[in-house]
Length: 150
Image 1 (cartoon, rainbow, N blue to C red):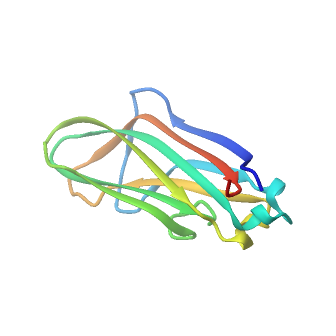
Image 2: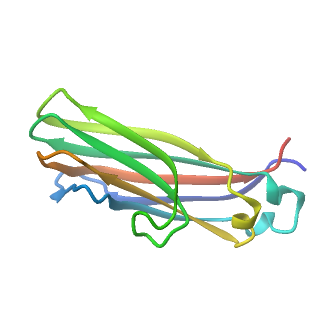
Image 3: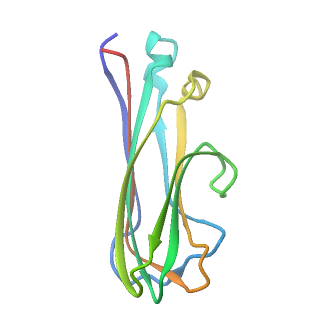
């Protein structure tokens, strides 16, 4: 079957630079999208769905530390309730200041997930460092779903 566009979604958590959300060892939910897959259900494309995900997170820190970005398929919106499909650990060894991180990830969800008609993807951010890391923005999480092999 030809390539089939299924859906595209955007989640904006913080679009400006005045955040006060301090990260902890328990990652914080900052992005949440549900990509529709209904058009692929019952077709040969149900087994050929491809998901593209990308996002941006702006943080500020007072000292060298680490930030973790996770993308999860499924789940309830609580960290640990779905399947981690992407994880990036960023070492902020350059000390104090602000940083903007962008990432791109992909997923080939199982046909059983496609058959539900919508697949939920969430983005979490956390820090394991003693020194505080603050989400200052911008924070965006985007995704699109396609199906087919040619």
